Image (tube, rainbow, N blue to C red; front, side, top):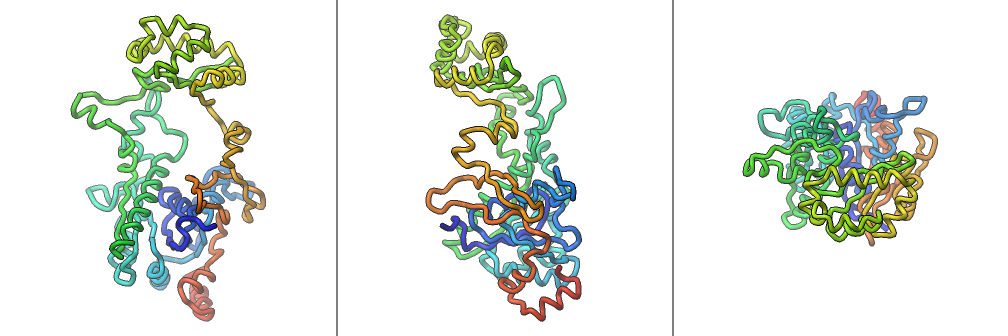
Length: 399
């Protein structure tokens, strides 16, 4: 079975997370992803995050999975000519350089489209390809700040905080994937390619619900509310006797009545302070105290059993060990393990998401060694013969 993007070739230019994560997803769906890396060190992600004793990243096998690595020195004119040849034979160029850099190297969309009218070039950058800050360096954290999500994350009496993952980068990559797929679909009708422009701060902003309307129409500025959504109760994280935290979402009237039955407090569902969604929102703090006292008297397994018995939506706050042991994760085969040549051991990683019933995505390989596929790509995609490849290598153009 082949993935739904089998037959699509993606040329990935760039590094770090925003952009390369999009390349990972496109590769999961079956696209051939050729990652261009500088010969001196490659993508810095090879050394990012937690590492083994030799300095190899545990992150690299996943974010670079299903990719082929070719090492090309873009500072050399002939190296850029190699990239132009590869781009002429690709469907998509995915890049996250500072806007204007590729044009300086004669590798911009206008430089490439004459040789490949159907080419789609997907840009991922901090601030987009236009505007007064287009040329400014931008990272996911800056996008999270300007896009609005940092201001709404954390507790109201403390400074804003991050989510604990590279959220802005990941959101931008998801929009890059959806934009690329939309452009590929349109190309089927027109036969023409186009540019897809993803700015990290815009990708974050797109998730901010009615934030602007709340202010512009109602004068309300959303802020930090900790673990609750004001006016929606009960919906919070509640403690257990053995130190676990369980999120219970029961703000609908029918679910709240089931919570009351589970607590043997059916009187609460008839209490005017809690009987309706609106009244529960007004008395949110008091209701959370009542529920917390109940959950804190039980061990987490006992509490989960009661919640399941009464069909109450819940979820334990998971850490990595919880995910590995969870039967739902196991049933869905969400964590897959693959032998990685660089680390010399099996590496667990998330399975391809979403799932396709007929053309499933798959993990065909973990992150490659630097330049591992240089000769193969120059031959099969670039059309270089062995003598030409040896010359490019001897002149330091490729490695």
